[in-house]
Amino acid sequence: MQDELKVACIQSSLVWENPKKNRKHFSERIKEITQEVDVIVLPEMFTTGFTMNASKVAETMDGETVAWMQKKAQKAQAAIVGSMVVVEGNKFYNRLLFVEPSGDVKCYDKRHTFTLAHEDKVFTAGTKKLIIDYKGWKICPLICYDLRFPVWARNVEDYEVLLYVANWPKPRILAWDTLLKARAIENMCYCIGVNRIGIDEAQNEYCGNTAVYDVLGNAITPIKPNREHIEIAVLEKRHISFYRNKLKFLDDRDDFAIN
Image 1 (cartoon, rainbow, N blue to C red):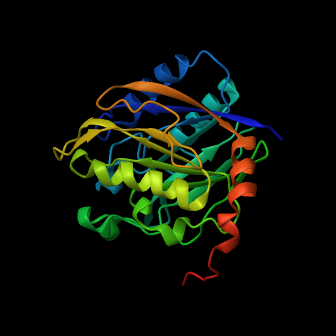
Image 2: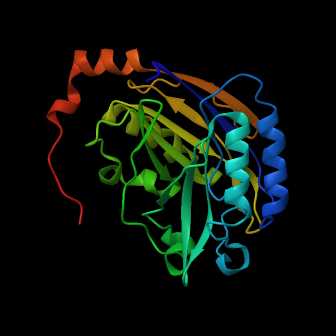
Image 3: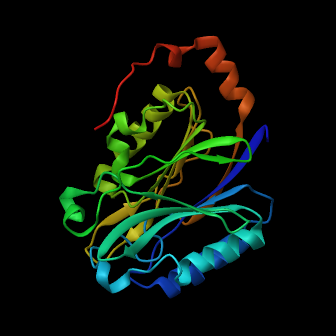
């Protein structure tokens, strides 16, 4: 068990529907992380951008990107996290992969597909929440549009880190900023949101605003919009335990079931 968890958040532009170029780009960014970290987080659909051309770019779980993530995780001795387009059978998934240095891969399929972009017409929605136990930390990874649905994220598992990877557009960035902070406060956890920058093929503009919030909703990393950069956040167990023991808000949470 570690008292601290160091998380590197990579805010970056993406090359449209070009996994090879995106893998090369992120290989270069990962090389820039000179200090030891425990987790490296990439944006949603980091190999392609937020495309609905799933049949064109989809990979299998034994494809090049998963192998690349395993190689990079092993070399960096840090878990690599990001989502990509995955095909299984005749179904496509917007799948988040949490790849550990050992090569172990844990998966979460986006539950709330983005109907405004017709993601629900192309991708099969996930049905299972994932809680990862990594180095003694309980991490709940989710994807972009999931941020708008607090019931799905509700901390009934006593996780310590809530993590979102995203392609969240600039016109609605106030919602991104507000809801990340709210998820941290209501779940008494660290909340991390890693978003892309740049303009995609559909002319959607992204400004990033990657951020890490603590239990009280304070930003513990500077928010740098419209810039490609790597931010490293140090999460502390004592911060979580102090405020959970002092305030005990989670003791009053409601019991519920999700259908």
